[in-house]
Image: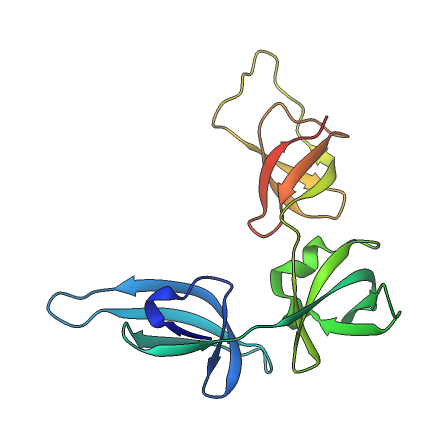
Length: 187
């Protein structure tokens, strides 16, 4: 599918010089009397290399559609993370580089979308939200009300993120793993 360079977004996969690349960051830039451009940081999904590229705003790009399969995360052996297709029990492995920041959110039994390009697994799509238990955080101060002063909390999967002061150890919270952001307390 052809799109304009102005339409690229973070997380989108496009074809660049014959290889699929993921848009990690982008910035629309219009310098004074020059033509508008889009500065993007891209990661080659086949090699894992990241690089900067500047598109003219009127460039036409090819958006890549990846095949996605629901798979269960099984385990990590130190170099690879292993996933299993729930229907045919076929297993695939992805490296830490292929997973990027998503690797820290993986827990045994987690059902996740694994992305395939021409039959080769190249990454995962994290769920929109996850419910996790807080295993370590500072106690709430007496008289402290909900304020802007968030505190760090460590979750059951080892990820540390900022939570409101009223959250305590042992509570279940809902988080957005893609942004590593607290959403709400789970009742």
